[in-house]
Image (cartoon, rainbow, N blue to C red; front, side, top):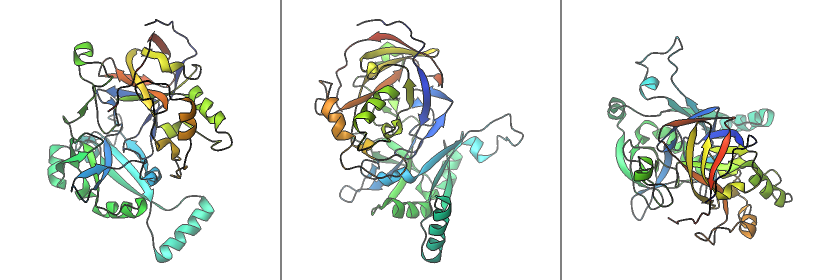
Length: 351
C-alpha cells in the first residue's frame, strides 16, 4: 500500500444529492455529510406493489427511465429570515423536498400544453411539497404508516407517505407508465441499512456505515477525466455523454483518467474518507438524465469492452468509486482540495 503526496490540481468540481431515488438531482455548493452519506441524499423512493408477493419494491431508472422527468428541489429552514418560525410545518420537518413533474392532461388542456411546449420548450408542470423528516405528530395527522419495502436484497422498514399524495401518485402512475399500485416512501429513522462488504467496520471508524435508499455505499465519487475518456470513445454514438448519467455525489477534476481506481484513503478539504471499492456499473447510465431516453447498448457495451478491471466483479465494467466518511459528521465544499493519502488494490465484493 503506497502513500501519495498532495496535488493542488485535484479538487471538487461539483456536489450532488438525489433526494428521491432515480429522479433528478440537486447541485450544492456545500454538503453536510452524515453516517448515511450526504444529508438529504436518497432519502425517498417510489415503490410499486408486486402482484405475486404483495410486497413493495423500489423503482429505478433501470426499469423506469421516465423517472428522469421528475425534478427535485430542496428548501432548508433559515433562522436568519424574518419569515422563519419554529411553528411552520416545513421547519418542524427539517426542510421540504419540492418535486416537480409534467402535468398529465387530456382534451383541450393537452392541446394547450402542446402549444405551450412549442413556444417555451417546456411542458406545464405540477409541484408537490414533501416534508423531509416528518415529526411524530405530522406522521399521525397525515396517516403515514411504517411498512417493509424491498430494495435489492434488503427489506427495511420505511415510512409510507402515500396518504398525503393520492392524487399525485395517480398522475405519476400515468407519467411513469406504472400499472401497479404506486407509493412514495421515506427512510425510517433508525432503520437505515448497514453497509458491510468492502466498507470499514465499526471497530475501525467508531460507527458502522449505513445508507438510506442508495444502492450500496454512502458516497459516490466520479472523475471528470475518466468520463471524458469514455465520451471520446463514444463520439459517434453519445457525443454528449455527461457525468450525471453516472449519478455521483462528488464530481472531481484534476486527476488523470482512472487515477482514482487505486485510491484507498483520501482527504477532501478538512475531512478524510475511505475509498471502499470501485463502482460496478449497471445499465442505468444508458438513460439520458434529462430526457429519460434509454440507449439500447451504450455506454454499457463500450465500458465493458475495456473497463472490466476488477477481479471481484469480472463481468461488470467499473467506473467511479464508492466512499465512506472516516467520521460520520463532516462537510465538503466545491473547490475543496483532494489529497490522496493511500493507494492500493481493490477487489470488489458483490452483494
